[in-house]
Amino acid sequence: MTHSETRGTIHLEDAEVLSQQRFAGDQFILRVRAPACAASAVPGSFAHLTCDEAIPMRRPLSIMRANPEQGWLDFLYKPVGRGLDVLGQRVRGESVSVLGPIGNGFTPDPARPQIIAIGGGVGIPPMVFLAECLKDDPRFRVLVMMGSEVPFPFRLAEGEIEVPGMPAPVSSSVEMVESWGIPSRLASNEGYEGCFAGFVTDLARLRLEAMSGRELDEVQIFGCGPTGMLAATSDLARHFDLPCQLALEEYMACGVGGCAGCTVLLSTPDGPAMKRVCVDGPVFDARQVYPE
Ligand SMILES: Cc1cc2nc3c(=O)[nH]c(=O)nc-3n(C[C@H](O)[C@H](O)[C@H](O)COP(=O)(O)OP(=O)(O)OC[C@H]3O[C@@H](n4cnc5c(N)ncnc54)[C@H](O)[C@@H]3O)c2cc1C
Ligand code: FES
Image (tube, rainbow, N blue to C red):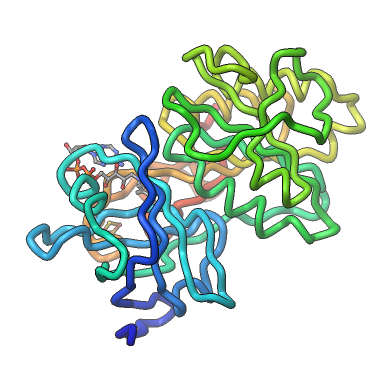
């Protein structure tokens, strides 16, 4: 039986590993049974995972999928050091301590029905979650754009849902996302077939350039990825005068607001302010993260 505790809206669960898949480029997709966390996870929120009893610090991972009915969560991760490396060795049937969901997620604005969700590398998971959550919401149309310099850890297929503005070779899509009725397109500097040769933000720019002024009025951008990609996403949004929310992936300690180890300087309407990425974010308005 899964042991679980609740502190406010954050749950602590001994989560059974249901599957651990390894992909090229040292990437993993981990599925765990964590019903309380799965029931309240939102796109942009994350969980703090214990990788091994010998490693005291938890590691934060964005929630990529949550199934409240079946009580599981999926994470996509790429080890940087020892913690996630050891997590990658956990096998089906073992238990992992999961603290979550933590943080404020994305807040889609119904006044702007066209969402462009831009994910780079280990910033892809929140975009997959966003797409899945909005797939049946008639208020929104989502386009997912992903960038990666290692092979995408998903089944790819020719995109059948048309995306205006894409050059002819840019045809690959993520099969799972397309099965939700949501188009996706991919970018890489590694020359993968069917992908845009360049950065994902340049691919998004092509899509935006193909829009009329009236269409642009309906667009909002969400982004998550490495710092350079976040800055480029913010520039893109500013160039087209579009609202943009970014999920930050700062290095963290406690993960629950107590240590101030994850603070970032933001430019808020009330002036400069230090904010904790874990509980004040991880999603922030791009104009606060990258003021002019
Ligand atoms: C909210 C949030 C969501 C995240 N989501 C994901 C995700 O979905 N998938 C994923 O693969 N990663 C994600 N990350 C990043 C991930 O948590 C770190 O890469 C991870 O903690 C590294 O652990 P490790 O054991 O592999 O390496 P460690 O041994 O912990 O770290 C190795 C080195 O990298 C540095 N470092 C570690 N993490 C970071 C960081 N985030 N920024 C800068 N330097 C760092 C450390 O200072 C250390 O020197 C997320 C981070 C945050 C804060
Ligand atoms: S990690 Fe401790 S306050 Fe955010």
